[in-house]
Image 1 (tube, one colour):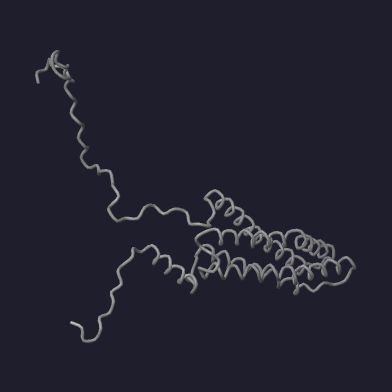
Image 2 (image 1 turned 30 degrees about the vertical axis):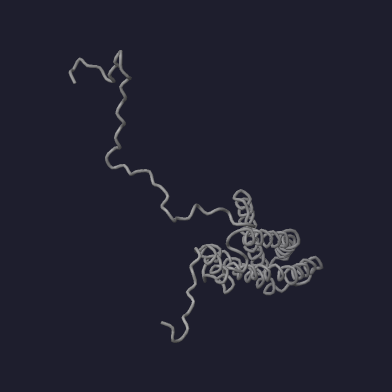
Length: 230
């Protein structure tokens, strides 16, 4: 091509227009991947599971109330320590009344919301309620903690608040034990949620094997030959 020639070339007057050459692929670039024969398509949402926006919203609620329940246990333990270590009756009365207020107004709502949101997440996602050991363990620990808060912690806090209102002495050791146990329990459940240990339950293994068998293409079953057959 001479320096004076133009690019792209002009079409001839009596012929078809010339075509531009197809640009070559750059060196080092990979071709567009194509789906191989026999590969499975992208998995779709399982039947019965929550849509992604709903699942994320429930997860946010579950994290908030779970952390709030843990923080409430820290507050109760701090107030119990303040009442136990103090020799001032006014400080004891303030600490135990605040514990009674937290127990009456916040403990049961946080426990109920934690349990309800956890059930929705387990039943509405691929984790399931009884498929994984950590989910199953956390569920029963949450039930036990909520039951203990309702039947043991609240009556103890009500009795302590009534005692300080009447000017009586309160046993500080009895109020130190429940928040210490609940704080340890909630920290353990938080670790379960993060680490997800222990694998599948027996029911989870059965469901996993059934799902794998359903996705596997059918194979002809070989019939055993009779004795003496060639």
